[in-house]
Amino acid sequence: MRFPLISVLLLYTGAALAQSSPYNYQVTKYMTPRRYAVVSAHPLASEAGAQVMKAGGNAVDAAIATQLALAVVYPEAGNLGGGGFMVARLRNGQSLAIDYREMAPQKAHRDMYLDGNGNAQTRLSLDGHLAAGVPGTVAGLFASHQYAKLPFAKLVAPAIKLAEKGFVITEREAAGLNRRKEDFIRLNTMPTAFVKDTPWKAGDTLVQKDLARTLRLIAQKGAAGFYEGETAEKVVAEMRRGGGIISAADLKGYRAKPRQPLQFKFRGYDILTMPLPSSGGVGIQQMLGMVESYPLEEWGFHSVQSVQVMIEAERRAYADRAKFLGDPDFTSPPLAAITQPSYLKTRMQTFTPGRATPSEAVQAGLVKESMQTTHLSVLDADGNAVSVTTTLNGGYGSKVVVGGAGFLLNNEMDDFSVKPGTPNMYGLIGAEANAIAPRKRMLSSMTPTIVLQHNRPVLIAGTPGGSTIITSVFQTILNALVFNLDAQTTVNAPKFHHQWLPDEVRIEQDFPDSTRAALEKMGYKFVKSGPWSRTEVIKIHPDGKIEAVGDKRGDDSAAGE
Ligand code: GLY
Image (cartoon, rainbow, N blue to C red; front, side, top):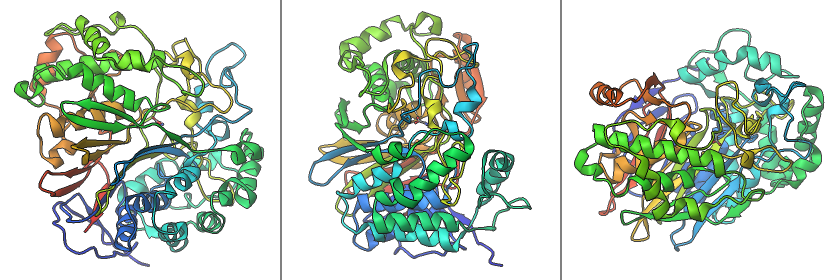
């Protein structure tokens, strides 16, 4: 038996990139590489991306290889059976936004999760076959590939090897698999690689032969190796066995969509981020716009004044999100209106320093989302920057592994409003703009973002965290660019989150007590939770120095040279 040596390097400064073994690897939390960097949720995935750049690939090659490796080594959220968004800024000045969000199957309908009395059966949109949307990730990887340099087969090779030969799992991964064991047994129609008789422990080797075969078919046949033929047939057979509704036509008809990236100004920077069907870009545009004129840097990081203004901006942006936002191919949200500086200024007119605005005084509704997703940030030696957030939605998605194909299906259908206009079991209100319809994309919060100064990337950032993604990216941008925190503190500082409803501020355990106490006196209710939002940041300084930071909250790790 092979035993791993998994250790954490807290500080690492740019030595040559060594290839580590899948049985003996290190977590690198911080590095200052000279040429290129990848940060992702798993050291082996970051390394797969970095090795591709070492072999002559660019940041898009690296992002593809990293995502494919994550689908193997980080099954909790890395995926073939989910979806995601890629935002990129190429050296030639071209900006990209590629949408590979899942789609509702053709047989989906508005009330599919309601019982005979019209009550939402929320477990159905969360667990099992009916929870899955049509996967978008593989189509997205091929849509991105036109901007890459290396053959796709080279990019998928590290993932195939990791699946075929296995890799040792970390303590966190062992705990995740053990936590879900009963779900995997209950929800699957065939044995899966994720279940074994004895509990998983750190150092065990996870081998995924079925997944290796699926990856090989993709390497040989391209996107058709997933959306048609053997793999598609396995998905359809899985649906038949488990009572799901994804059809062969749904799979064959899936297309990733190039979107017009969302770009806006903030204090002299250009923020480049994801448009709808993610609400994330619009969300940070609104929040940054609402706080822009306040003297945050003078007030200071985590000062009572700064946190209050930021909470009130978060509250108002989430209220708008719920009311207006949905798949732009199905609805026409008033985007220009709700991002106008004059509108954002008016929105803050109801803000009273020293007093909490009750959420009932701020109109609209909300969409619920879970916390599991994953992000990767990449910079190559030519200055190409890529920011990708990808997800199965909940941890391990629907928990359904496609029989014989070895990959997990998402539970992204839960990101729709299961019952629009009516509070759900958590008291949250869903919106008509995000009601279920066949072939519609569910609203997302994923916010892959690149900040530019003088047309060059200065910050590549993003995070998982469901509805907290938007506030985390908002705070990351302010931490780095307004509060001038160093790169590691930017990522690791405690976060706070307000999403309009419920009317409470969620804080991480180490949020400062004195700020909380002062805000409580103003009427804010705090709930300690977390940790959440494992943020992956690459910061590029004016003198060319590169800092790559993996969030302390997980096994997140940087690689580069
Ligand atoms: N499933 C999380 C999101 O897309 O926002």
